[in-house]
Image (cartoon, rainbow, N blue to C red; front, side):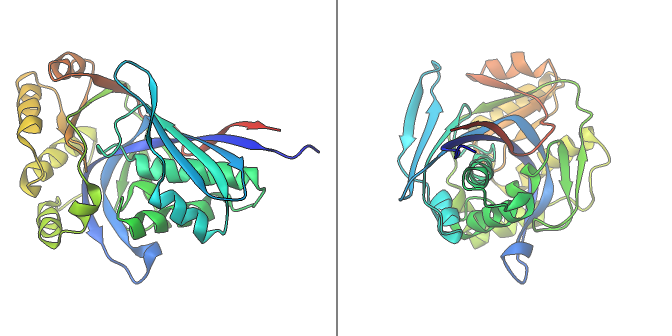
Length: 289
């Protein structure tokens, strides 16, 4: 049987509406609780056999041209070192990086899924998720996105870590729209004790009963957490005026909103992205010999 030389995998991203950091007894139980939406856009990872680690990060610009935006990725390098693997990895995405779309988690899960298939490691979803989660926690690029991105849906996480049960609801018939005003440096926020105290205080006291309540909780959290920027506030007010459920992408300087009416509102603030709820986690797209 011919040896596989290259594998392409995809993992959806995740928009977090609200979250609270939880520090467990180890990496596996450290993370966050909260709620969010696993989205149809994410990261495509291409892995090729190599005797050294090489990572290139690509994304499409506003005109649709693919451009390389980074020639390394500390979380991906950390994950590959944990598994003693070497490979040439290229990641590609359409959404803005560092803007609250869970792309770091998606990149890790897509890459590790591709590497598992490329080298016939037999890791399986649970081991892949553990390694991706450890890389996120260690590099401070996320807390709960890996747990959410294991599968699709509108997710509610009430226990931190990647082995905890996750409630998933797929009944979201209308699209989501999102706009980004630029990145937020996630490690700086997650590493600030003062900011994390405000985040913890803003966390809602109960779980959302439905999607509408999720947006209300998310909006209150955004305002009370102190993370809302002036541009985000302006967009949220416009969504309010139009009766469109909306909140801030966590952690990102942007807004996500639900329903067909959201598109026209967010277009006033620049390029908007149409998203759907994802129905699966990481998957293999292609394997070439």
